[in-house]
Length: 164
Ligand code: FES
Image 1 (spheres, rainbow, N blue to C red):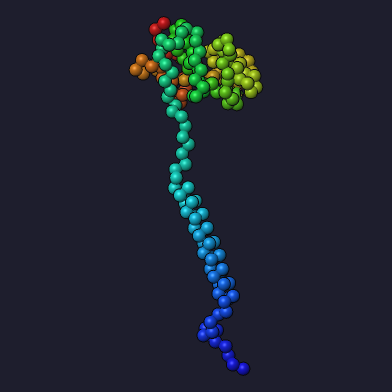
Image 2 (image 1 turned 60 degrees about the vertical axis):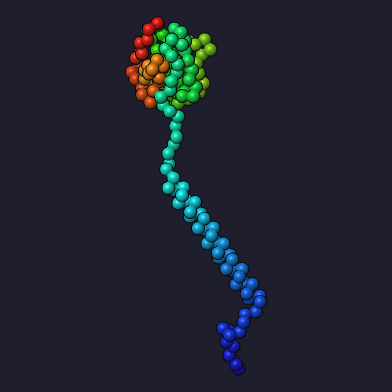
């Protein structure tokens, strides 16, 4: 019986098609794996930064707020309150579980819709489960504009004295 030398015989056409198909499948799988690894590597190199809004916010000129007025700055979740003695800012975030409080329509205080806490206009707790007053935020005048720094909590009762 004669030996058949596979290397000398040209492969049949259907064998070529099978090899070509396996080559294409292997190349495709390698390409998909390379693309996935590249995407994940680029994602890893991108800094994982959370972009937050600017914590300092200009809220207008001191003279724009009349005594007794409450300005709601919804974008930064804070209130600016004008009293006869001056101006102060309160965080609108409830001290119970962090819901956003609402200013009462008559501007006499703030209510939390989540569990019913009620806060007076100075931020003190009137009712509800909130354990602490609303946080009072730093206010300063910068180039004749009131600027609230939402990242700086100051002592309850503090305010910025401005001329009436
Ligand atoms: S989160 Fe405001 S009362 Fe619970």
